[in-house]
Amino acid sequence: QVQLVESGGGTVQAGGSLRLSCAASGRTFSGSAMGWFRQAPGQEREFVAAISGPDGTTYYTNSVKGRFTISRSYAQNTVCLLMNSLKPEDTAIYYCAARSRPVASAEKAEYMYWGQGTQVTVSS
Image (cartoon, rainbow, N blue to C red; front, top):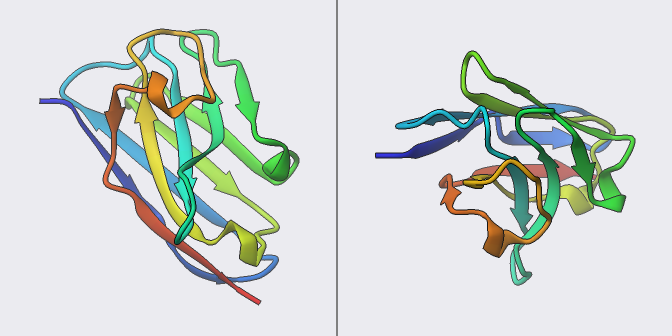
């Protein structure tokens, strides 16, 4: 059974940093794209960042470029999201997702596997 489990969420003041991790089990995702999405209350789930497999090309939504960094460990079957200079508008539940294909996508419908999410709250 495939599982994606996120960790690292929490509450931080504006300007602070958090590092989210996603551990995959049940299959290897070394050849698959993985991504992070987020959903704020009353809003649609939106794309944040993705990383292709196996070449590791990264993609970001414009609002997080220069502040967030996505990375992965093929050996540990994990993907991380380092979030710096956090803003109150970054507050959301953050979800890890994985495709069955190597090319990253910003479309949530392209991702087959999802974690349960981890809450990130940024106070002003």
